[in-house]
Length: 418
Image 1 (cartoon, rainbow, N blue to C red):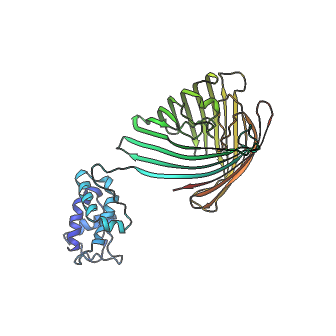
Image 2: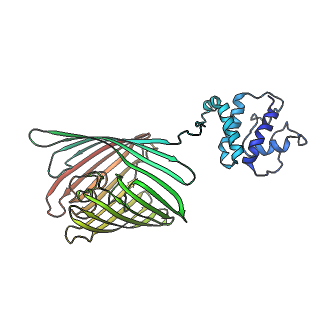
Image 3: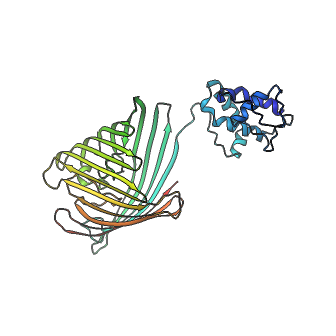
């Protein structure tokens, strides 16, 4: 089939994609301005659908290979979001016809059956070692291997899905004379939510299992998920969310023991970002715990970046109790490992003072069993290879209420993304 005829057929579906008139410039030296297809060829060339042979010629009388046609189809597919329904159907048919050539070109062609799945998978893995993570088991060690499979899908223009399947093995080696060990295997759906977009002006609603992250450092609740809730998210420069749900399935000690025994939780957060480098937070959490009864937690925090340095801090207080009810955490980072850039690194120093009934968590991934801690820490992270990051953290902690030594907590992990 001659190339000029192929271009004419391509024009049938591409014109609905291009849609914009271009100046009558001559893209190819061998296409006369008086040629019947000159206007169409110029428009397709300016739209980036066809590009000739790289020497300024079009060679319209030369037979076209399937590989060359697949190149035109691939470029049309890249612009298919601007096509109407009829043109999209034509592009889909061409994608099936030239699927082998498109795959050789590195173009992903999804299955075009009506019931084809649109779900996409990504994931990460972590190997973690901790020592002295439990004040009641000084010298005890913990080993963990974790894989998280992230699932995302665009159901339609208004509804998205996101989920996280977590698989983790934990082995605790206790410090008593028998050096006894205990282990657990965990397989759970930690996140599974459907988000309805733009239900009101700049507002989304999500339903299902979600994260409960509050503050600049996620001082409260952390990044574990397990918040079975309805959540309204809104805003841009001034943004925030309001949610109501249940956290009774949230595994401790990813959160402190007080929160892990909580059922219904009302939560909210406001974030104001006056610049790209600074953000201010205000947050609250109202709940009922089987340990301490009703609680009312309020908090505030900020993060800011100046050159290579980033500082972040949060404060929280549980007004439901008079004693042991405050928590705050601050960290100072220099640079920071970027998983996409081997050799990049970061150094940090931090301080925490987390009282037992503040409804705050242990952060920086420490996962400490006892919520009542305070002290200094320091560490670093380093990108060993692309998508492989090593982190080391040492924390000198003691009991926030009684000053009892916690001994140094050692924390090492390697993380992988795929």
